[in-house]
Length: 480
Image (tube, rainbow, N blue to C red; front, side, top):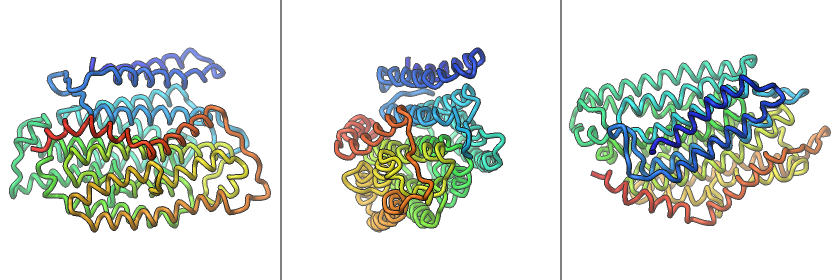
């Protein structure tokens, strides 16, 4: 059954919620392993799911692109659960407290994963919009999870207001598209659209791009990111930085490649300008940040600019490059956030200067965080370099050599501000109160696996070749 992975995640979410009602506080530790088992079961079902099949009258389709996106969503959710386990217990004596409400926390997290998985398989506007809301609304709840924390409440309020505005833009754009074509099916709309000088068509595209720009943190729709990243619980920030971006990328793929594929060349210059401004603003503003979560927010904004480069070429080349870089970004970014979550839980601190001397208090976390930061900067032979190389190649083949030059300069700028954190960890001496910081076995194992993933994806390009082989021939049919 094509929908079995989604059904398993939904059943796991309800199972966690119901089981939580009958568990004592001491036995609630079992909820995290249960959620992980559910995600593992969903991945096993996904692995056995046949491709090029559809159900519900073509409204739900499984294809290679959907398969790889779902792998990214399940991986992001599993890592988030792993790095949340220590923080759920909390610690006395530090400012960062436990998240609390474990059953509800895992349930909401699993529901947003379900929405993202439905999103990439949707083939009509209604299913697409409902899936997007199912993926987005739980994120508003997770951001404001700490009810007694003013910053978390403020972040949730800002996120829900701007998120509602973005959803309104998307719904308005979809309404205009339906009015122009009289169809809800994405492929049918792609064949029926004849923009010409139709101002309504371009208004619909502008509304859709404004909405997806919010999801992907594209300049100038990025203003929510820094405050939301800083105010949300740190594991939620980690999840927002990868899964939310993955959902935005999936939605943009659905809209622009499936529905508007023939008209992408007409707007290629505009996409290139958005990419250049996004990566430039994200990198330059990150230089002056002192809070590590705001720092990573602007890093995420800059990464969105690199993702946009994949839309400049044909889908058969751009989508595999974006999917590979999405996988690389998940592994690298979660490697950084694993260290951030652990450090905040141990010390209650979130400033970059607080990481002074980390290489002496915990060498494993310092090494893993350094390697992950270098991967985000695009240092060879790490996976970030390989991922950026493929995206840069797409822009170059499309004739946007100036954008490749801008991206290369921005990669150099990003190396400078990532080195700020490395400098604190390896060069600056620790404070007088520096002490050895322990790390739990499960968190150390998670970080070790992410570290190996960052290196492996860079040294073994077979993953990209597999993605390209799976998607290229099928995506060629989208170029009409």
